[in-house]
Image 1 (cartoon, rainbow, N blue to C red):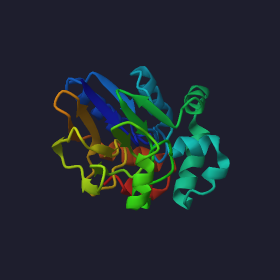
Image 2: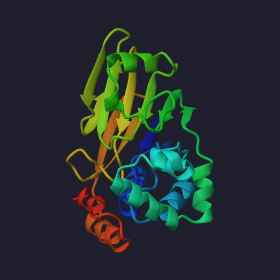
Image 3: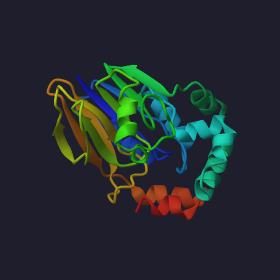
Length: 241
């Protein structure tokens, strides 16, 4: 089976459309989305509609959490907070229904899916935890592989039961070890923050137990213009360039 894992679309239909087109020609059998379908980007309703139209199982991201939990929303930095207020004003009833039904984790394909960090946090960043914190997290769930997003960068954490190793998930294929456990960050479709402005997603191939990191080009200028026209903070556009 080939499973596409996408995350952090952030209202960017151009990036999402390009990723979906690549998925279609990549022999993928199924998809899962790790949340933050909305936020920062100019077309939240459209990205939610695209997720629904493709029947993509989706977990709650911290931006979706900010919509249903205004106390948490108040913790966002000023630019993110302003972006969320604009996004909330844009959302239609169908989008609000989508956000409100999201769960914080999903277990499927013998793996775990969560936005922030396992077992089910949409808010914890992987960079916040030391080795002991990661080991404690591993002890709270059984799945060999957990896919996460939230940091907008491709990363991999590997455990052999004794030691923990961190690495960058390189472009192309990475082979996994059947005896080890993994926490794998799928990067960001709509707002990568790793110094490369391609849309990113990954494909897990269970037949050879490998992860392929995909880099997809799209019309960035179009998104930048939409962001500015909608009145979002300028930083949302600069981050794409």
